[in-house]
Image (tube, rainbow, N blue to C red):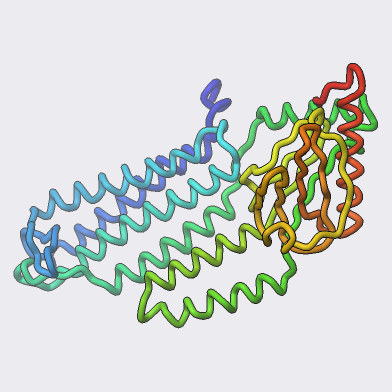
Amino acid sequence: MGKLGDSVDVRALRFAVGFPLVLATAFVVCAVLLRPDLPEPLAVRWVEGTAADFAPFGAVVGVSAAMIVLFGGAVLVQAVPLSRPAIMRRIMMGAGLFVSLFVTTVLAAVLVGQLGLPDARDAQVDVAVLAMGSGAALGLGVVMGFVFKADERWSTDDDRAMAEALARELDPDLARDSVSLWVHARSSVFVMLGIATLLPAALLTIAVPWLAALLVALALLAAACLFARIRVDRSGLRVFAAGFVRVMDVPAAAIEGATPKEVRAADYGGWGYRSHGTTTALLVSSGPAVVVDRSDGRTLTVSGGSATTADNVAQVISRVAARAHRPGGAAGV
């Protein structure tokens, strides 16, 4: 395949082009077989449950086949470039399969709803076909996202990993000067949060759906605030709320030291991210934490998980700060 094979997943490209075409062909064949039992023209749009617009059979089938190919292929082709992360390509492959099948389901429901009618003005979209087909499309899309094996090539992430591995070989202390961990609230907190929000939301689903959705969204947001990711290396300290929102980023040269400490979240204003005066904190629970002293007089406090991990994080922070303050010891990997 030459240069094309170096930039795209050839197998995914074949599927992205071939599957919508095969699906559209199957739709056309089935539509032709149903033709004797369909009215002419066909209903194509409904207003308040009544057919409003009509089109000839040939135009409906031709446009339907084009929609299957264009909509399905447009999403499936997003899984083809090798430059994209494998997880994104798997998601797009699953989404593309779902879109292709869902569009076909909607069009099939339109045709089936008009079978045996002498006049298309009495036609309705077949709800049973729409419901069953949509469920099958969603299920198959999820399965495809899990089973699709994306071809990979050497990427910038691989270059970075290789550089880090080489750096560890040349500098045995590098591994000791880095640590990454997740911290979260106790499981009982999440159980209580679910009881306080998800159960009422389930009861409100029938009466007030929008309020139920709001409660679920608030529960997810609150649960996300009870997770944090801590990353320490020779460049400094970074803390991410919910695992991806960066709320603390302190260069190693700006750190004076760090100490493990038992803290009460109430003393800092409660769980989550808090900033008052010269004190900034991200606590997911009361208990072991790491207190970081900055050279500008500010202090940072972050949950450390267990007493052992909090002590380890404090040691690594103190070590990288001391290295950064030595002459010629600028942070960096």
